[in-house]
Image 1 (cartoon, rainbow, N blue to C red):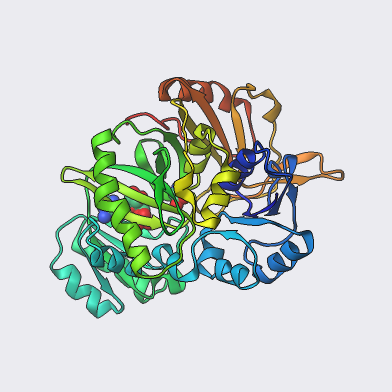
Image 2: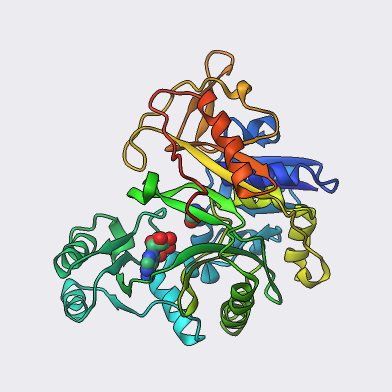
Length: 421
Ligand code: AMP
Ligand code: GLY
């Protein structure tokens, strides 16, 4: 098979690393890719948002299957456009991608299909928001409904803060059109877990669970980011919770997707809060998580290309999917200033000094210099260092023994990934 992966971050590097182990896979292309991906696949200079060019490339190159990493192209309907041209692709249709593209849509879906989630209201004007906020208890979540790269959810501790946030989103448009409507939502207490699932429209199969650390700094301080690290498995996700999640959340989600005729053949990521009353959905994402994928895929023992083929054909029930018993930990090295402004083009040194039993998945990196001999930073999150061990503790120790060997100006990382579970 010839496979095209759309995207160019750590998640896509992990997907390609896994696909590269499959005897079914002959060639892998990645658009646009990054410096690390370029060592195991062919980087193609096409933006992940340029659907027309991606279609042209797929046809000319004879791509057998396309896999989409990031949410933006999915929400803009890349899957429908590829399928209209008879090209095979993994991902939700534009309609199904609304489960991530619009929080208001996702909450409406959960309500309709009785899927446990936080109580909520939607507002499209500041006047509506004020009336809702008048009757809330605190803290309360105020969220932009549209896409915001993981940075559109705000915890508000008081009425004043909630009103202020609603104004910033609805009137001042700090997140542009993504804040055209907002979701005001009950704050849930508990432990978060990410349940990524394979789905083919007939069957939904959860992957090994994982947990992401979303705040920029140690002790969950600082701003929300795309994710500063992750680990798998999360031991709070017991068999009992898993059974409840399957019955109360995953199966009703599948039924809802079928009833709404979404034709969803791809990955669905269910972000859960394990509360005292049981698991509740915080959000749906319509793709692999980043950095969750970097911790889950190294534990996958089944051929990922074969799983993708089964998804496209709607025959997911015909495959057994196995996971290793190991624990994995991924720590992200980020650029100074992330998730705000940061510099690009800084030389990364010391990659060769990392112990060979660790995995390095590149996020924002590029090749630079006259002969492309230097590897430089090209994003906010730069590299994910992944350790494996019999336990999470063993995996984490390996990562932290090594991560300091890599350097670039202003590099920072959290030192508590996988602790305090
Ligand atoms: P979202 O973009 O909706 O996933 O929210 C981003 C993050 O905000 C989640 O991963 C949680 O850490 C936090 N969060 C979102 N909704 C809630 C909620 N209702 N209660 C508590 N924390 C939440
Ligand atoms: N790590 C969170 C996400 O991928 O959305």
